[in-house]
Image (cartoon, rainbow, N blue to C red; front, side, top):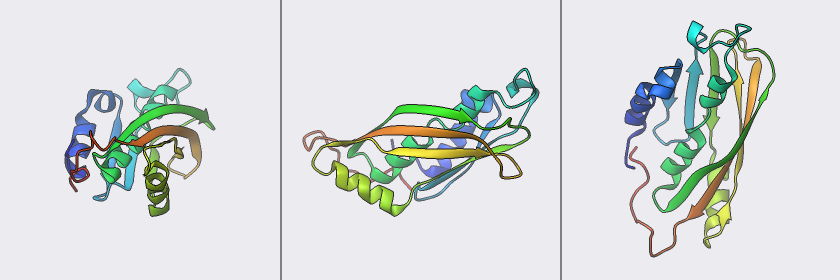
Length: 161
């Protein structure tokens, strides 16, 4: 996949599971290390008690760490979501936001852990916050990362910047 962050943002925002539920990708940094996502509370994404539907909160965190690592590490790596769980902290009302961040030390640790073909199972936590900055939910993500075997490895650049 050789998409620019800008084009992928447009695709995400038109993708029916996001578009149809009010999830909006606000920003993807050019280096794939930061993504900001928001969801506004609407009649079609609220639950029976008037707060954000939990599945919608979970969906707004689903593909982003995987996408970021694919962009940063490039096509020489296999990256998959492996597991996730969500802790609901308080009812989400109004606009909620999730901010995904990768720093250089995390990326360097992944490269080192997978350099001999071993798999790595990095864990990330993303908090979904409301307009006041209060945590609404906390999502724990586990990914699967492994270098492709040298025979199958494509020596191409990461996702285009």
